[in-house]
Amino acid sequence: MYFSYHRDYWNTWLPLAEFAYNNSDNSSTKQSLFFNVYGRDPQFDSVHITQDTPARKQSTKIKSVQKAVKRKLAVAINRFKRHADKSRASPPAFNPGDMV
Image (cartoon, rainbow, N blue to C red; front, side, top):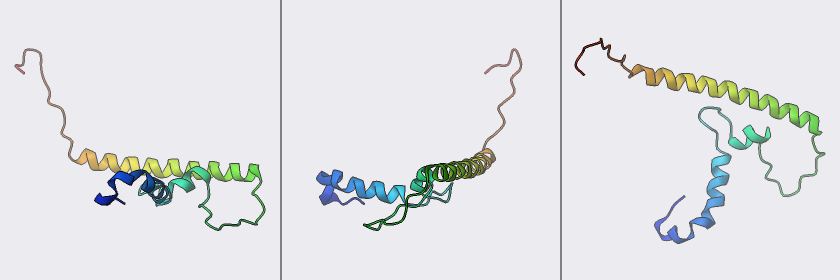
């Protein structure tokens, strides 16, 4: 969010921009960066009363999220590659003695 009259106060807007970016769904993974890192969506309530998730269960969940992210990124990379390959031309073939 940028307004010309706020250009001297960009540092006050940075946390809001970072929060929005980290909690927006990524086009490749279809998940937020926060979810990809922590394996859960952020909690916005001011008081969180529920019992903590055991560390082993949370670790397993994060690992499964990371595997899913890797799979989704591989699909996205292949999609980008196919798109880029459409406009690529084969390199020219040169023979010894050709003027280049």
